Each structure stands twice: as C-alpha cells, then as structure tokens.
Length: 370
Image (tube, rainbow, N blue to C red):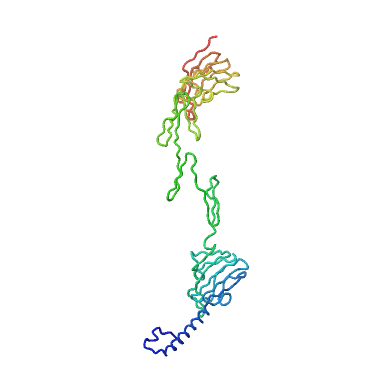
C-alpha cells in the first residue's frame, strides 16, 4: 500500500479526514516495523584456530548494519565473509592483534590491494556488493573506511653505512624525528625548495716558505691551487709514484763527470752499470781494487757513450781482451796486468741497458814504469 500524496483534496469534507489519518498511521507503523527488523545489531565473535571465514546467519547476524566485536584465540587470517546480501554493512572492531584481514578482489577487496595487520581497537567498515543468499552468491565485500593503527604501516627509520654522521634521531609516537644539519667552520647550509645545499666558505691559498731558490707554488686560479711541475735536469730522473715523486741521479754522477770506487771480490770478473759503475753516457773515474788477484772480463748494463777511466788501486786487477772488451792486446798475450796507478780508458759502443751490453773499446792507457 502506498500513501497518495495528493489526498485529501481541498474539496473533501472534514468527515473524510479520519480515513486519511488512519491510512497514514498504518503506513507509519509498517515502516517502523521494517526499520526495527533491519536495525543495527552488535555481535561478539572469537575466531578459532584454522578459521578463515565468517558466515552470516551463523557467526554474524543477518541484518543490514552490524557492529562486530572480533577477536581470535590464535593468529588467524580473515579471508572471506559468506552468505551476505547486497547493501549489508559490517563495522568490525578488532579486540586484539591476532586477526589479519587478507585482500582478495573476489572476496574482501581492500584499499591499495594490501592486507591489513590489525591491532586492538582498529575498526574496519565493509559493504557487500552483489551478494544474494537465495542464489548462493556471496558477493564481494568492499572496504569503505578504516580507523586505528591499521590505517598505515608501523614505520620507523634507521641510519645505514658505517660513517659517523647520523641523520635519524628517533621516533616519537607517529613522528619520525631527524636531526638538522649545522654549518661548521668554513661551511654554509642553505635550505632550498627541494634540496639542502652544503657549500664551503673557506678561501684557501698556498705559499712558498723558506729561503731556497726553487718555488713549487705558482698561483691560485679560481679554486685551483696551481703548483709547478718538476723537470729533469742533466743526469737526473723523476719517477711519479702513487703517493710520491722519486728524484734519482745517475750513479755517482756530478755534472758530466763522476767518481766511483769499485772492488772486485773473490771470483768477481764483472762490473755492472748502475751498481758498480755509472750506466749513463758520461765520463767516470773508476778507482778499482781487488782483495785477491782477479781478472776483469766484462762490464755490463751501460749506455753507449759511457767513458770509464779505470785507475788501479792495487796490483791485484788485470783486464783480458774479449769479444766485449776490445783492448789493444795481441791474441797471444790478451791480458793487461794493472799495477797500482795504471790507467786504462775505455768507451762503450752500442750499449743499451736491458737490451745490449755493447762493446768496450780502449781509448788510451797510462802504465807505471817499474
């Protein structure tokens, strides 16, 4: 029965109003009865071990709006609510942290497609769409609201890496607190719209100290401190290492001439360039002695152009002609026995250290007459 909103007419008699009043009261009573039948009901339910679904008509009431106080005996997953009718609303209040609501677009469709790990006091509101118990269609329960800790993740923050500076300080309730960045000596900190700019305010320069002639520092250009490079002079070599520069002079070198004392040990027949004598193409005086009678057969590892003035320091050294020692001695008598004070000058032809020893050719000799 439907109330006709056009009645009574303005021409109806007053005596007819009683009929209209009785009809209205009957409709109001029917509406009230329907509202009472579909009112909000409160239900308490505890899920047991292994339970994953709530059945309307068994675990929950078959009403339009229901407040459900839900707990669990052990940790469980709520995956489905069955026997629902389209338009039903379930307001679930969780009494503990043992229920996890699982997202599934076919059963319980949660916001952001993300499961909810609940805590005591959390509230989740679901509405049913498409449910029809008469055709055994459960429909889908859609999240329409939630409140409590489950509205977001229980986030925290941490400092990673092994460095000293730590930006994260602590979490106070829901607030992640970070330290600010202070400007130390020679540093400026500027807050921009999307970044924090840290810059140096130091103005550095350099200078040459001491009273020496050589000056390493040249000038400052912009932020670049410019230093002079080192240049190799005569008989000087420079070697760049990872952390240092090695400055080396040719063996015993002093300008284009040098002096060295060489000693032949027992069984020694060789002088080595860069060790016993110079390996550079310079003139060198070699004061040679021997602890016992020894014969010098060869001189190795020297550069072409090297000139050695061999001076005998005692009577124990002799020099023998060979393929690499081209001294002016006859084949029948290839050895010179040097006496104290004798001088033999020889020059290297074709030598290249590490490649070829070359040949030594006699330039002159000066022998002591006895």
